[in-house]
Structures are given as C-alpha cells and as structure tokens.
Length: 127
Ligand SMILES: C[S@@+](CC[C@H](N)C(=O)[O-])C[C@H]1O[C@@H](n2cnc3c(N)ncnc32)[C@H](O)[C@@H]1O
Image 1: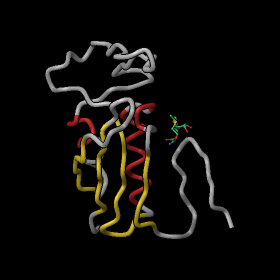
Image 2: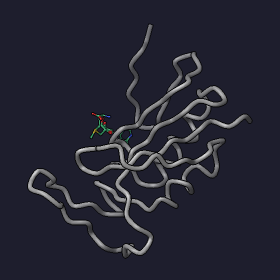
Image 3: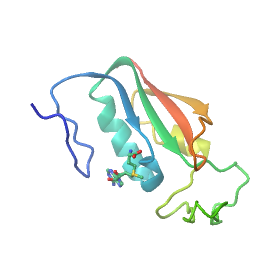
C-alpha cells in the first residue's frame, strides 16, 4: 500500500478520504497560484467537516507590498518576500486562495511556532 507520495501538483490519489491534513511550513515556500491549486486538489479528498491546517508568515494589512521582511534574530536567517521564496502573506491572501474551493477559512493564529508562523484552519464544506 502506498502511504507516501511526493509530487509538484499535489496529487493525492491514495484511494481514501481524509478527515485531517496539514501543510506545516509548506505554504511559506509557495506562490499564490500553487496554494490555490493545493487547496483545490486537497478538497477533493477531504470528507465534509474535514480540517486542513496550513501555516504561513503573516504580515499586517498596512505592511507595504514591496517590503522585504528582514530576519528578527540570528537563528532566523532568511528574508521573507511576497513574490519569492520564502514568502510572507496577508491574511486576506489566505482567504483568497480558498475561494475557488469548498473551504471555510478560519484563523487559529499564533501557536508558538519558533519562527512566528501562524496557523490557518480550513474546514471542508459540503459540495
Ligand atoms: C520547510 S519544509 C517543511 C517540511 C515539513 N512539513 C516540516 O514541517 O518539517 C518545506 C516543505 O515544502 C515542500 N515544498 C516546497 N515547495 C513545494 C511545492 N511547490 N510543492 C510541494 N511541496 C513543496 C518541500 O518539499 C518541503 O518538504
């Protein structure tokens, strides 16, 4: 039985439906179009009421779109960009990427991630 699958288009044809999925520190490396595709394809294998937990680097709505977020500590070596890896995003971006899929957006927020990633909880709606 296959229980591990790695593809660049989020293929998830395991032949079973899921209740829970997680993308921890994955959307931090994806542009918006890939996030949108991921949500679309994961929704196809989730049961209604299922949850998809996703982490991202959030910036406030007034953070300038073209500003690079510098590291805050010595252990945090990467700049964050909105157009290149590693990415920061606005909360509204995380809503927008789910608009073409049957997800309800919810924000969990801080969860003590060591580099400050926040958590989104997408809930699978009925078709
Ligand atoms: C920082 S690691 C996080 C790994 C793991 N989730 C964890 O928390 O330890 C980032 C992960 O995103 C995956 N990734 C990056 N770009 C991707 C893409 N375009 N499609 C699918 N996965 C991608 C990488 O393969 C890597 O496993």
